[in-house]
Length: 193
Image 1 (cartoon, rainbow, N blue to C red):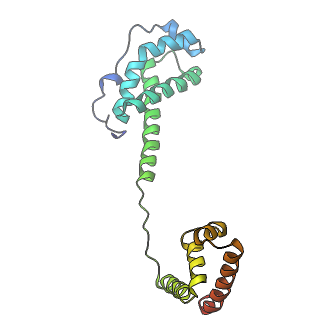
Image 2 (cartoon, rainbow, N blue to C red):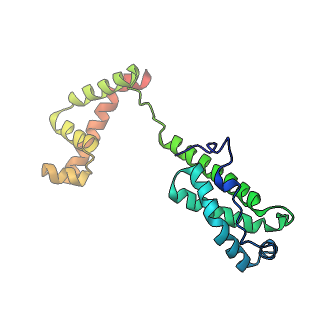
Image 3 (tube, rainbow, N blue to C red):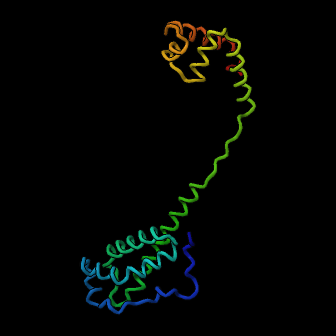
C-alpha cells in the first residue's frame, strides 16, 4: 500500500485537470442536488477522482470505494459548493481527504492483524502445581486413575467411560467420586500454598 502523502512536490496531472465539458448550468443543478447533474459530474470527474484515490491507496478496489464515497460526500455537501470557484479543486479536496481516511483505516487494520502475542512459559509455581496434580493422579488405585484420566485428559463423559471400560455407569460414578475425594486429600497442601 502506498502512502497518502506521495503527491507532494509538483501537482500531479489530475490536480490541475479541468474538463471543459462541465458547464456552469450543470454545476448549479449539482449544487441543488439534481440527480442527472450528479451523474453528469460523476461521468466527467470520476476518472480523475479515481486516479487521485489510486495514487494514495495503491489498490484498485480501495480506490473504487474511495471514489464512490467521494461522490456521496460531494452530493451531501453540494450546497456548500461555491459556483464562483472552480469545481475541480473542491471535488479533489474531498477525494483526497476520503482516500487518506481510508488509508489510515486500512493501516490500523493491518497493524492490528500483525500484532504478535508473546506466550510465556508457565511459571515455576504453575509447573509445581501441575507436577503435584499428576503425581497425585499416578498414586491413585488403577481403576480410579483410569476413570480420572479418561474424564479429565480425554474429555469423556461418564456414559462414554462406561462404554469404553465396559462397566456400568454407576461404577464409573463411584470410582470417580472416590478418586476425587482422594485427590482432595492428597492435594490439600497445594491449595494451602
